[in-house]
Amino acid sequence: MAAAAATLARRITRSGVLPLCRRLPVWGRAARRPPGLPLAPCRAFSNKKIQVDMNESSGVATMKFKSPPVNSLNLDFLTEFCISLEKLENDRACRGIIITSAIPKIFSSGLDITEMCGKSTEHYTEFWRAVQEMWLRLYSSNMVTLAVVNGSSPAGGCLIALSCDYRIMADNPKYTIGLNEAQLGIVAPFWFKDTFVNVVGQRVAERSLQLGSLYPAPEALKFGIVDELVPEEKLQEKATAVMAQWLALPDHARQITKSMMRKAVLDLLVAHREEDIKNFTSFVSKESIQKSLRMYMEMLKKKKS
Ligand SMILES: CCCCCCC/C=C/C(=O)SCCNC(=O)CCNC(=O)[C@H](O)C(C)(C)COP(=O)(O)OP(=O)(O)OC[C@H]1O[C@@H](n2cnc3c(N)ncnc32)[C@H](O)[C@@H]1OP(=O)(O)O
Image (tube, rainbow, N blue to C red; front, top):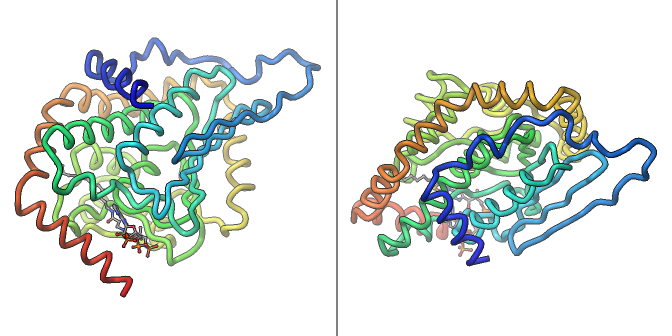
């Protein structure tokens, strides 16, 4: 895993996000199986923190986060995420992925705050590069990406959902979603903001980011953060139906359209990647920011008692 991560990091350092030529539009990749052959069995690969099941007959993979207690996005998680995504992107049988959680009530608690507390500049650099990498790969994916938000999804968790093509959320007002960075005394980076604006528009994004709002599922639907609410027990069925609808179209038209809609935002981070890392490391190293993060972690722990 460490070697794979290092290779990945080296490749990205040299060339930015994966070249578009490697992600050429393909017409109905999963439909290439010769007719009459029996359906291929499901394939699965599982690492420590993410379980991936690939259904070869539908061309849809399901990626399930399983990193207790709250699927926080630490370096190992992010590395696994990128490697899994790369494997699927390179798998010609895979046309779509469903991203969801195996942890009850939590989709993802966002970036692991302990990765941003009391660490070295080298560590912050490595961590932030991995966060960027996760977003670059997911946001630029050629596959249909569907987030099935089956629990709370603050900050980095929300970013994962926002980076997908479509979001279904469990219809439970106890589950919240949003970019709440301001509540932690930190600022969502420009590419979090741009991703958010591309989903909900300038006004909702501006207000939500300034207030660090976390929205219960019904409000998240109202503001367009998610596309649909579905009773929790129907999420799987709905996800299958939505995915089938998206995959009914030829891949190439959808992929070129997606790339056209997202390119400017992706290019901006690729062009300013090192500067963004420097901003992050100097920001997060400030004693005032460290203090805010420590206080936030203490608040989370106190909430329990
Ligand atoms: C220029 C750049 C500036 C920097 C930009 C950085 C952008 C940042 C993006 C982020 O994602 S920051 C992270 C934001 N995340 C949150 O605010 C979520 C905080 N967590 C919660 O609200 C809740 O934990 C929950 C997810 C709603 C779950 O609640 P629940 O009651 O089920 O569990 P808890 O008892 O609260 O948590 C269990 C356990 O997990 C720890 N924990 C929770 N979230 C995180 C996290 N994000 N990172 C690290 N650890 C986390 C929590 O402290 C508990 O630990 P223990 O007490 O059991 O040790």
